[in-house]
Image (cartoon, rainbow, N blue to C red; front, side, top):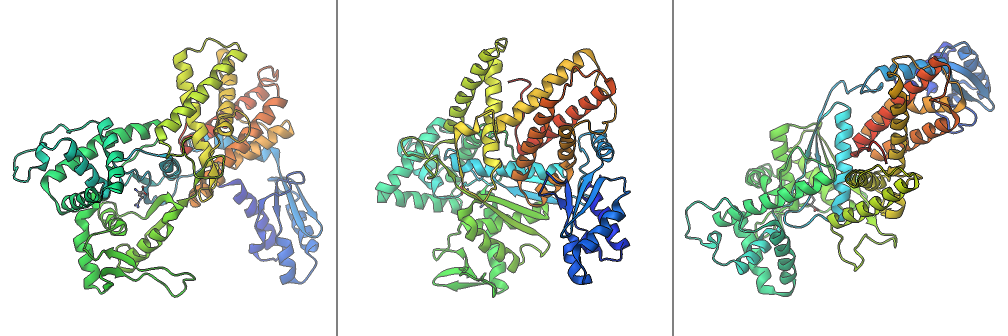
Amino acid sequence: MKTLIDLITEQVTNAFTGQGYDAKYGKVTLSNRPDLCEYQCNGAMAAAKEYKCAPFMISDKIAQALAENELFESVESVKPGFINMKVSPAYLAKYVSDMKADEGRFGCDKAAHPKTIIVDYGGANVAKPLHVGHLRSAVIGESIKRIGKFMGHNMIGDVHLGDWGLQMGLIIVELKERKPDLVYYDESYTGEYPKEAPFTISELEDIYPTASKKSKEDEAFREAAMEATSQLQAGRRGYRALLAHILDVSVTDLKKNYDNLNVSFELWKGESDAQPYIPDMVQMMKDKGFAYMSEGALVVDVKEDTDTKEIPPCIILKSDGASLYSTTDLATIVMRMQDYNPDAIIYLTDQRQSMHFVQVFRCARKTGLVGPDVELTHIGFGTMNGKDGKPFKTRDGGVMRLEYLLDEINEEMLKKITENQKEKENLDISEEEAKQTAKTVALAAVKYGDLSNQASKDYCFDIERFTSFEGNTGPYILYTIVRIKSILKKYTAKNTLPDAPILGAHSASEKNLMLVLSRFNAMMENAYEEKAPHKICAYIYELANAFNGFYHETKILSEEDLKVQASYIGLLVLTKNILETCIDVLGFSAPDRM
Ligand code: ARG
């Protein structure tokens, strides 16, 4: 379906051209004075300069030309030359009815030319527990992937595990100290390696931090770890077998953690998967003269004439011949182009990696790893701060493990839900259901708390505010959905859901609800274009408020005119479906009651 704003723009543009003015002046926007009108056009002001007359002469003509148009309830020309419009309630009701009939899409068409888009998010590091820093990447990436899917694109999420760094050598060396007799350390061994991992996840979780600590205090240990890392990277058999075990155990655990966040990946590739692509890629960069030696390292220049700040060369190989984070990312691009030929790759990491991605993207383009049509985008997000304005930490100042953080919020939520139930004397909720509900609401609190901020901004992780049932929060949105579900349940206990059209507005609050509903498709397209989940959050907050305004002013279940009641119920169904679609795209869901 065409968006309402496009339909309005068409009419206004026609009016401009019909009066002999250029079409470009017919641009329409949402009103910034909702007390005066719903949509506005300021084109007469600009046109006045070109046609050398007073702006209101033009706005008067346009208003007159649109006076009889069925789309509008009123079109006013206001000095000095504004065109203020209100949409006709009948037209709006028809539009909203059509949206309701368009099941599952609500007027939002899928992309005519679907793209293949890889979203590189999550970015967990193997053997290291997920910490709050990984939360944003997972939450925002998952939502961007789902937005793209909703718009009909072929979205491929890749967790891009960090499985190729020094942490692997650290684990190998620490494990050797604990279990020196393992066959993996015997270089003369040529047989098969055991299927079973020589450690559990809890052992592994203890091995890494211990090793990491040792490496800071003990030079010899650190060197041994570096040596083990480079032997692993050079392909030492026993170490490769250990890597496979580490990956296995770690991925099982990571999947569980991401499941709890309602985050899932199509691909579980890692940095190690890109390694086989490095030699040919490096050779090509040398052969074509892109890569050259500088201070012992192999580099590719990526600065451009228009740069306003210094962009250092992209280092491909260090002086000892070892590859780096950027080498791996470049080789991953080679692998992805070969396997999926994507139209775009989107990366989600902390903003502090921006320079890395500028270098990698420029190098990939310059050396022809991607053609000019492939879009490479880095979405760098800001820091998640505590209430003190500093990066979020545990009470004793350590890095907060994601698991513990979620547990804390689940508990907080369970308390609230239980209290709520007592207040409502609605004690028939079992402990099991209360726990499940608390989990669902807690996840909404965390995700909405994050996603409602523009990704690039830092934000304050404020559990108290996020878990509140009032204000711009996840629980408030869920509460609104639950409220609608409960009305519909009462209604369907006696009636079947009507398939009736939505009638024109009976009140200002009903019209407002319809106006907000009608913006769904334009909002969704825009959220996709700008990869901006926060726009969906802002929209559902507005929609929830519009619904609650309508609800408080309207007798729904006791409405006697059955046609009007059926129309109200239609609006409720549409509101609920749109809210549920939006939260699904944001990556959370609503319980049946709370
Ligand atoms: N593992 C990295 C980290 O923890 C993030 C990886 C992001 N993706 C990428 N292709 N570089 O910082």
